[in-house]
Length: 337
Image (cartoon, rainbow, N blue to C red):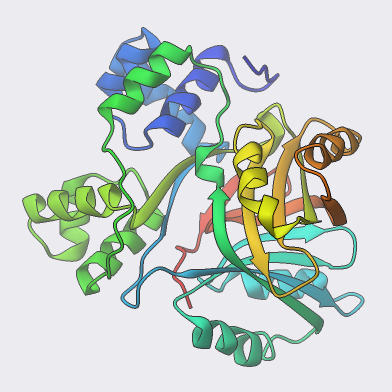
């Protein structure tokens, strides 16, 4: 169990429960935690109101099909980084923004409905932002691990297994969203725990229709939900990333190996640069990155770490705007370009 000076045992366990099932009912959460539903609801309300914890939602499908994921490294003119970051944070297609070390000022995770849309981001959107001096882009071809699967490990494995059995099973069936689906996904991006009646009022659809559509979106993997915690409170307060060059024949096995590492938040195969693998990590200290690099290099012969970075802070994480302490202070729902 991970300890935090600012989160109680109940708070940590509740966050873990919502990581397993972000839309779990308070009664079901109470059963898993051994407390009454009113205590669960009250605890969550306090956590969410302080911005220490939130539930986010983002699309994994668009009217055009499955969105592309790109990692854009942005170099800024001296003195322009904050203004550039603020401008990017307003863009719905900029899902995550990190203030980074190394050969970039910002690392931006972007969702785009197609390659031409990504081209528009690079040639029109970014060129319109004053202060950008350089851009480098790499495209994810396979995402093997993403942050929604990261866990605090504060709840007993048996309870986690029971919660996972109760939630809507996700089978990734490709689907194209219609206008009602897009609206529902966007509203879930504002509040991923919004009730069906609230979503019905916002969308103009009937409650039963909304329930059916939302359950279908979740079951088909068209929308991804995740419970997030301010990183400083997680037990892994440092965010890092490495770019690796892996022999192509070993790439799939290496990504599978990374999937079981508790520090790994994101693992994606890349194209468009010298590296063909990107790994994002949460670690306990900057020095721990060296140990993990050794573990990663041992996964297969011929792995080479070609670049690395530490995130000085997250400015935005999957649509949620974060303050300097990593707390959610607003949201710009993720909408692919």
